Amino acid sequence: MNIHPNEPNSRLEPLSSKQMKQQWLDTLAQIPGDGLKGDGFPHNVLGMLMYSPELFGPFLDYWVKSKLKMSLSVRQQELVILRMGVLYQSNYVWKHHVPVALEFAITQPELKNLYSGSYDGNFNAKEQALLKLTDEMIVNRTISPTLWARQGSLLSAQEIVDLIMLISQYVLFALANNALQVPIEAPLEKIPGLEDINC
Image (cartoon, rainbow, N blue to C red; front, side, top):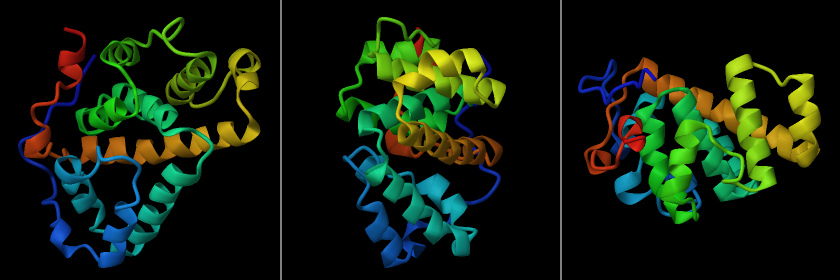
């Protein structure tokens, strides 16, 4: 697997989080759990997105509200997000979401399963459906009739739509991190990356 490295030199200089409007900070404070706060705060990628301030605020509202309101639990969301990190070979997404995942009862063996794409017997039926549909949508850009018949029936209409919305958010994050070569913040350097997970 061609893992995107932790880039020492980003293609844009991240704007400082000190430049964030208070309403943006208030929105970010609503993110579930502690993993994306404090040392885990994604200063650098948010500092890149701040170059488009007219879109940044509305995107934050949508992103955070989605985390709070969508029909998928935080654990289910994190399973999908970590798999997105693998599929897009994005160390930035992976390293930022491992602490969140551990906080919401995702285990170290499950992290290895997410890396390898081994779902059967390791996750419950709904989690397997979410992960298999995620793989299908990223790899094939759609859902085949066979997989829809086998896995789609395990999810409600709202869960399927919410899954598509969640995937779309992390396409943005993964592409931004990879294309702009966003560096990992120093406190997260110690978290094993994708190149380490299968050791």
